[in-house]
Length: 326
Ligand code: TXA
Ligand code: MG
Image 1 (tube, rainbow, N blue to C red):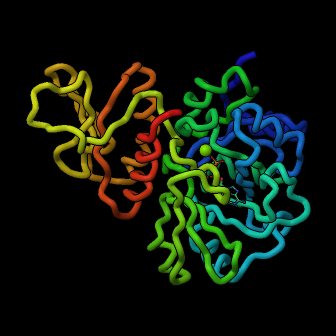
Image 2 (image 1 turned 90 degrees about the vertical axis):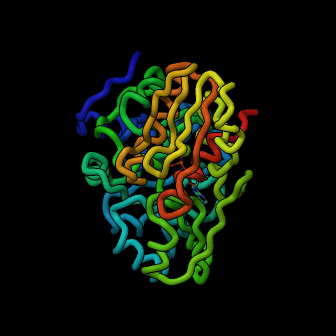
């Protein structure tokens, strides 16, 4: 049976209430959702994604008051950040309550929580009396989906329903900040909400973005978000050399066009943004990585974004996408 793509929130509710899986839109990427308080439902997520059990999930809620159910302690500075950035692409890690199953947290005493800023997701979440556990709706290690078709392409045979909410506006996963230790909040994953944005509200925070396997945020494994297309850095090329590889994505110009392709002698620019807009670049990134695979492009060259603001998060994803598959 193939997944249905639609906007039927009642249908999603009934699937989720009987411990099934539904893909949901969010402003960052599409999530693969199940009842986050039910171990049997959550287990289906790991199976569908082929995700290792050591990698914990984010619980999505529809209103801030739901935090009481799933956390045991929320520090004051975290509250300030929530007021500023929720609903939005910021995930918090707090001490968990006894109601959160071990499978969600991979046995940790902490739980990741997010109130997403997407009208369709919120409409669904606000009608449920449980939070939704939802990792990105892609097979483990692959690029996250930013539209319903991306989900269908990979999980269409595995899940019954994909709730369509259009193209994801942000396009890269949420920033993650841990409040495990009250006094020292720590950013574990970069996203649209930057360290500067956070520090403007609560003062100095640490950043611990791991390049390799990290037991704290295992989704931060090196070589994540990887397309099959081999991505290499533009720095490896001498651009004056006429002996160009078959296909090249590269921008010699500026942030406005990171990538452009040389196919034989023709140049086919592929722009993440033509307006020098890094937010637009982020929202197009995963879709373009998927296009490479769809068109069976074997190799592409990449120019990094400027190391500033959301450019840091874009570069983080590019770096992981460039890491070798095992
Ligand atoms: O934007 C997003 O965050 C998307 C949408 C669907 O909300 N979700 C997402 O989920 O990116 P996922 O599972 O692909 O990434 C969640 C990350 C993983 O790196 C995981 O290791 C980390 O959150 N994480 C979850 N719970 C954690 C915890 N208790 N401690 C540390 N890291 C945790
Ligand atoms: Mg993911």
